[in-house]
Amino acid sequence: MSQILFLSGKGGTGKTSLAGAFAYLMPDKILADCDVDAANLHLLFSMSSDDRGSFVGSNEAILDESLCITCGRCVEVCRFHAIHDPIAIDPLLCEGCGACETVCPVDAITLKPRVSGHWIIGSTPVGPIVTAELLPGEEASGKLVTEVKRRAAEVGATRGITHSVIDGSPGIGCPVIASTSGVDLAVLVTEPSLSGMHDLERILAVVRHFGIDAGVVINKWDLSPETAAQIERFSNDQELEVLGRIPYDAGVPEALVEKRHPISDPGSRAGTAMREIVRRVGDRLDLGTDGVSNE
Amino acid sequence: MNITVASGKGGTGKTTVAVNLALSLHEPHLTQFIDADVEAPNAHLFLHPELTASRDVEKRLPTIDKEACTRCGACSKSCQFHAIALLGEHLLVYPTLCHGCGRCSLVCPEGAISEIPQRLGIVETGHAGDLPFAHGLLDVGQAMATPIIHALFEGIDPDRTTIIDAPPGTGCPTVAALSVADIAVLVTEPTPFGLHDLKAAVNVARTLDLPIAVVINRDGVGDDGVEQYCRVEGIPVVMKIGFDRQIAAAYAVGEPLIRLDSRWKDRFLEVFNRLEKEVS
Image (cartoon, chains in turn purple, orange):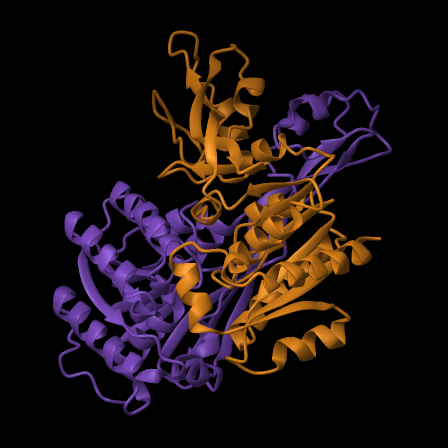
């Protein structure tokens, strides 16, 4: 199954909106939302949930206070600031490594599996979707991303689907790295601001570090044509293909709020630009998007 | 007082709020600024600090003395992150999976495991004018952001009001950025996407027992779902920033709002007064 992943470094540049255009226009695909901290892709559609399950991504250390002799060895050994005097374990800081369990002389600490979130397999009018919800403050976001990708691959294989559209998370850390495995093309969505450009440089370095092919899209380019031009120069220097530029269009949030996509709005400037980007990526990856329907 | 500016959804305007709050506050109050979005730090693009010091933040990676190792497998069995594997005669360490907890060296009966520091990123400190500034940078290819955030917070001066720019999301880096906060300021946009992620961020802040205030950015673009939610939940909306191409253009080139129009300074000072009330 081919994989197209949307990343940005900086949040809020339009990853999900653009992933939505691919979701509407690409034939034969499954959607996967790997922004498990703040999964939004399903909000673009009316989704019905077909299957759902708990995800156990890590452990947490549980203290039996009746056995604890408050020797403090666990406090010394914990590198995550998760154990405080008098002995108490903060579940939000505990990474579940079990170093405390190893050193406790009276076996007062045990590791228990902990539910970090849920995965959901659903249906949308444009195809199946796998998404997730990370529980508040959980630390296993990278593992939950891997779980979403694994389930998407499974559903895709069962149903004979050939492509996947993957919405990634902002940043460059754990969930982003987890989302890049096996990806054919990373579409880096940026905006024409110094912040957008700064974070584009960082995310580009990450995808190149992991050997992932990438292209860039400049969203809302006309909010600062000078910065957009600067990003294009940077991209040319880096031999990074500019897959397209999307103009600022107040109709985009309006349409998305109503669960429509701007690509279906006749005369939408942003919609037209996104349609062109899907076509260009389709050509590049030979996805069979030449004859994409206008639905 | 430590004020962490966070959001579930990215790109809602955290940095705009944090930077302008700090610049507005700094004259009447002693303030400091910490950019804790170590994966995508941007506040320096607005504050132009002079960075005068830099230090490495490390995690400790196991290294195995092959002579002393008896291939007993205790380390690989005890590792909760699958970062050490015993394959026949070979012990393999996977640096990106390793959390640097040190359990393997604790369990090794032969004392064959020592730990070597590996750089995760850096903390840089300096001043923007006379505003103390610090930010962290996660190295490319590294997964663990939280140790850098904790290292940043070692520099918190309790005599100053500290404005912390948090990473987006609701995972462990966000929790780390909120862990030192007295109040969470959650910046959102008035759309179903903003609302969905605001709810997740509110859950995190409530798990940490923090008072919460909301700032609505790009007011007028979507619907009234966020305001209804805040009303029902009893969360104060302390500021609304309307969508304005001039604001977007200033943001693009790293120009703070208060430089665009000095009336913003009074508005941010009012916000600060509201936050003080919410904390007390």
